[in-house]
Image (tube, rainbow, N blue to C red; front, side, top):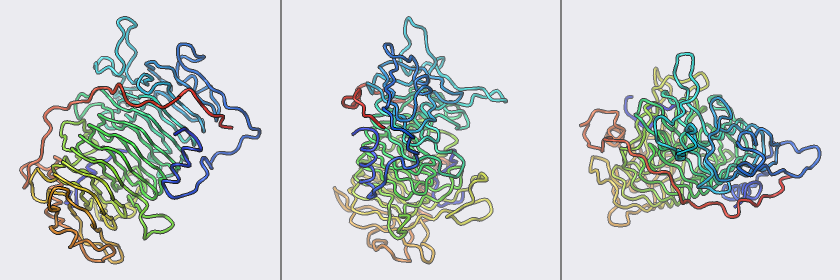
Length: 524
């Protein structure tokens, strides 16, 4: 999860359960039995419904989770729940096929702050510095941070219709995930199967400075094989990304009807490929919008490769039909450990391979509407990662971006920062190596005038997919991407917005709640 300078270009340095999962698989074009990793119980039983809240059996969510068995439903009444289910998690779920559901998305709040006095009551998700819980203290006297709701290596868990806020990471970037399906972070292995999240809100109202604790990720999945569905969700105010899918060569996740705002990145997907669909969602007022990426880090194994596992010449990682706009915000939280996100980039494929970007509407991006770049990763890799899919050299793992298809996107009002290479489309890559497909651009259009690009006339220069030549403006566009991260002292041939004061969006209060949340099914 800790990703140093991941965005630098190529320069030196429905309902839960079977029905929902079936919908996800239709979107992925597969027929997969949900929760196949789960062994059938010896005797079918009726699922129990456990109630949390003033009139329920349980007063804490974790108490209900600990008492539940596979197949049970936990219904949570409106309230502000200050949970401490584990040392570094508010609610820790290790039981498979568990269903956690709030009865009101906006009023069931899993709150990372400390509980306040009864009178006057402290507001939920308080921004007060004295209210924040920075987690356990390590042997050096440093707080280690906490996660909100964490599902640890438990298949078939659904989380629905609630809000999670103010779970803060440590100063060095550990923890700080609001909702996390964790299949084994840092292991380089897949340890989680099916998952579902619907009608979820993940945010934070607290930020001090870039070197201090902050909320890192909103809705997060890692080391999973799916099938997975994330639908009808909102995330904001994250120091790394509102949404994150990582460490899965064939993720089999559908992310749909999401809304990401005011984070360093709307979406980050480190080494996440295969069947992965990001669709019908809105990404705005982040530093950068949608950023799949390859890294030689603990989300092993790299690279980010969208090729279909059973048909490597086809692309199964698809970014389609999204609204991407106004991701020009230098005043989002941004984790120092994460490195600079390029302000003004709508969709960036960084060291990515074989992804398809199609049918998106991308507008009012000051830097680039859609940009592809190689990525030289110079971080010291952990033992689990060995520059797979990259070119290893002393002190660096160079990930080439190739085989990406940028097709039939609608663009307008991009590139108004007016630096070299800024515009609708850009390619900052070297020509692909022998046997590797080129990046290609076809059918894209500017809705208000001529398509702007670097290289110029990009569809004529790089339009035919499958060519063995090509390559983009490695030096020109690459330098500008570096400028946009803020890691290169300006002026560096371009001028980009600089952080003046981090501003957070208010806690949402009126997002759509799940229809009829009290109705549950028997999951025997």
